[in-house]
Length: 308
Image (cartoon, rainbow, N blue to C red):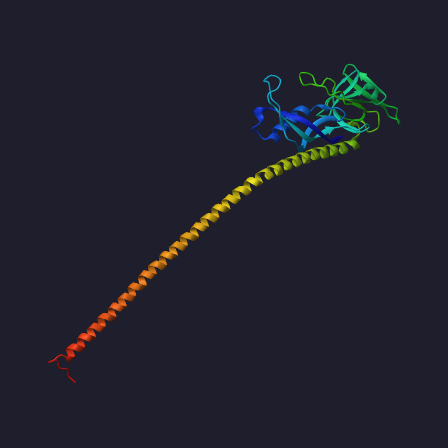
């Protein structure tokens, strides 16, 4: 039912958007161009998935009227496409009933046609209630039981034809010939889900699985965006770390030089102190020798007597 389609297109970016992240701008422009529109021979575009590659942008000169100096980016990208296969069984809800048949909505696509000829037989149309009825005949009692195709009821149908249309757009941006999907409810298990209790749980499980798959796809896209953002921030962080390491090295180098200078000053001060202490000792020795010499002269002088 869903598939990934790879496309390549030249996306024009206006000069007013040159300052923003080109990935964000390109994604927005791609969504505006493709989402909710039919891609010829592919199907209905549901959502943008991811980028594959970018090429160099080419800027053409503008004349201020038809062209304004846009930058044309050649981009390869992937889209989520709704492309059901023939005889595939789908579940939708009944939007309306008319004499022509039923209109069914899938939520994102509301133009599923089930002509009256593709309803389960025997059937009839209740003009008062404007509802189609499946007139089921009980094989045992031959009792006729009416099963109504009521509005907003879940209905299971199979795809019998699919036309993608031309994909051409009008001046208002609408497609002139959108996709046309035709279904049928002519087999056992098809029709309103409430008619087949055994199938209801399976349908609910399928819906839960579809929702989980969509959430997983969104989370994957988000993770890819965060990874690309981290890759972009990594060089800047590495540059900042290198600059910080350089600053730290310079600071530690300066501290080493300061410590060396302080050690030199201490050594110089110690060198100054040592000579002083040496001079003091020498001076003391000199004075002591002088005193001894004077004492000797006084002892040898006439009239000086030393007792024995």
